[in-house]
Length: 435
Image (tube, rainbow, N blue to C red; front, top):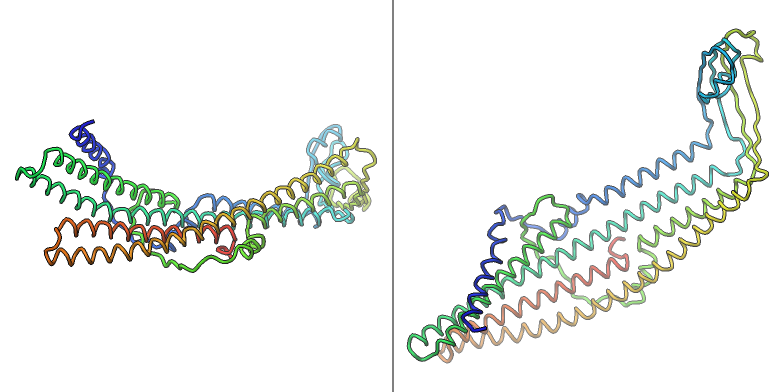
């Protein structure tokens, strides 16, 4: 492919890449800090709302379980003609469930378990542990969402930092193109060199368009994580970035095992499963109930014995064909399965912490290397400006040095963003960020 063909190909590519940016609707550019981005995401994220609803549902199940330990009171009435037993269809309780033929009745009934061998207590504990599970799950979801916002925010900053070196490169390539055209016009250069300079200028413009599109996509991704319904335009503010090295790995591992909400959620599931085992085992025991019913019946002799009803009930399973034993075994297997899940999760968290720690150490070293490169680039740019002022070098040499300085500055800031992101990864992995 000749230089001319490559030039026109890149020119078309620049125009095509510029179309999305040109089509983007103009809007107000909002200043956005990292803290504001996190607050917006926590307020708008739909999955967090679902988790909050799940907590409320679990709390209602706790109230239902506790209600089983309290007396149950209902009222019923019946008017019938014909056989009394047909009224069983209505599932009435107490006096109203057995009136005489061609009669009517109503009653108020009280039913209470007076001895259930802690069935209701164990069920209440299991339901309360389930509430704890959903609360810890919500806490884990919040921590993960914060990490996603931090990732997207620093990616947006990195993309924004790519614009400056791309713009400086465009200036440099345009100056080189002008110089090559001037030499060609003065017959001191060749047409091949002029075409080559024009090709480099076109490549620089394409790089600038690509950097602008990358910034737009990064900011759009940030808006999506924040839960923005429509794409927004943000001016990201520089967060405070500490360059202190990460803590030692061993304390971070210990903190993770104590603080990660995912582990706390699994522990709550284990506790709930253990309570359900105890609840299932109590089905082998008898249940002693008491019932009182009082009311009025028609076509009956109005005596106290006919208007009041009281009874004790005893229910004892003698043979269930192995159903109770299988139910108990199933709940025990659920405990074993959840404990195995916890062991797997613990190993995954330890690996996550170790990986994040290694990444933080590596990126901190990259920051130091980028700082030295920036210092060198500043010195070279200063020297190039002095030489140009004294007529010892051309303006192009100063522009080249300036381009390298801007690129070094961009690399330094991007290295800092990488370290800040790695620090956020450590905070999430160790659970210290959510404490």
